[in-house]
Amino acid sequence: MRRASPNKINVLAALILGVLPLIFPEDFLRVLCLGAIYSIASLGMSLLLGYTGQISLGQAAFLGIGAYTTAILTTRFNWPVILAFFISFLISSFIAFIVGKPVLRTKGYFLALATLGFGEIFYVFVCRTDPIIGGLFGIGGVPYFSIAGYEFSSYVQIYYLDWAILFGLLLYSQNIVNSRIGRAFRAISTDEVAASATGIDVTRLKLKAFVISGGYAGIAGSLLSTYLSTAQPHGYQVDLSIFIVLAVIVGGLGNLWGSIVATVVLTWLKDEQLSRYQEYSALIYGIIIILALIFIPQGIGPLKQRYISSWKLELLGRKFKLIFKR
Image (cartoon, rainbow, N blue to C red):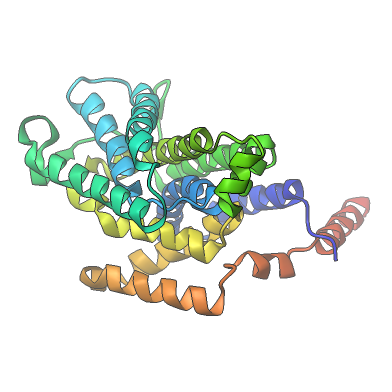
């Protein structure tokens, strides 16, 4: 059975996402907005973990860097939100480059611990820096995202903004994984020594994946601060990093759309079903990771491919043609 091409899946997904605000109430759109923001971060983690095999438990810190950069520039210096958004991406990517240079010399569990340490350093730093960053109370009054005076303030407007940015990053990520760089990423994930023997610059490409992942997280953090109108330390702790890793594992390593679907589902569980058990979030995420590795070790990707196949999409296209002929 032939698989559906990525272009067909992208078109079908875009059509479905375009009509969802017309179907679902605003309460569910709130979950979809958060799901899109977190999906941007999990998309970057999918490139890092799913394609190069490098695990990072510091993604929450990069989200926080993006959020605090936007919050500081817009509230303290009155910068336009759109400009602060791009600066947040650049600063997150730059810090990922600075951190990645020494951290990526380690591997496996040591890499996870090193990135976890970076996340804890960031958390302590923002909690103890009161004058500019606001300490434990964070920064409030972050304005809504706006472009040329047009403000994205309603759930419907924020929904289209967040999913449009996510979709653009998804297309860019698909181009990466289908290019020579993507093939080099997969070679590194399979065997770093063998990849290096074939002439692949393993260190440079691992750092590139880490920087992309950090930049994506910075974008997500910037959008999250404008969505919540605040940037607070407790929102960027290690449980958020575990949540992002969990979404990539459940979605399937090396499956970009799978990580997005898993992130949205887990966001719904996190905010709607498990919100009263936030103190046990790390325990719950750990249990879900264990169950996912036991029952769906390849993630939900194979399940998606089982039900979304090319012949079904072609059948759907024929039905549309018959309707329009009438």
